Image (cartoon, rainbow, N blue to C red; front, side, top):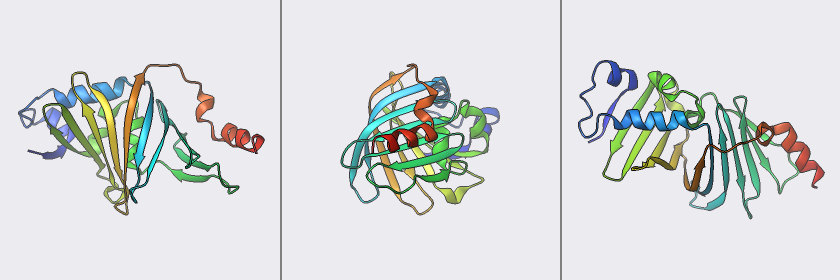
Length: 200
């Protein structure tokens, strides 16, 4: 049974609401908070059912790099609260979007437990998987993110991102590795643009 609640209400006032495993949500939050860097391969299923593949880097707080393989051939960077999309097949300038209202930003928080105070949380645990859905209650029209974790051990397996227009993107992760060293230059949009221009 799925239960919709605010995280702080669950922790402070209703600790008996989740009956299957009272500590699972706490463990998931701890797992996410302990991610300092994450590296993985990904398969992305887009809203039109097309499929893209590539490599993913996350460095907290607030940094992400997704490099897509052919035929997509693009790079997505997140840094300083800004999403920058580079289309390597086009001469058009990169596209920029603010990350502030996107539910995707929860993956890049340094302390998810603090940020979840003002968020709606939908928590559904099964024998081998747990699905955690988070929606910003202050920006409910911006969509939501649904993260799926394997258990024993806990590993982030995929996320489903639904935007304000109900468009869905699923990103499935493989070869997930935590704790590696990553240079901040990997997430620098200005350096990335210069590199792209030099290679053309």
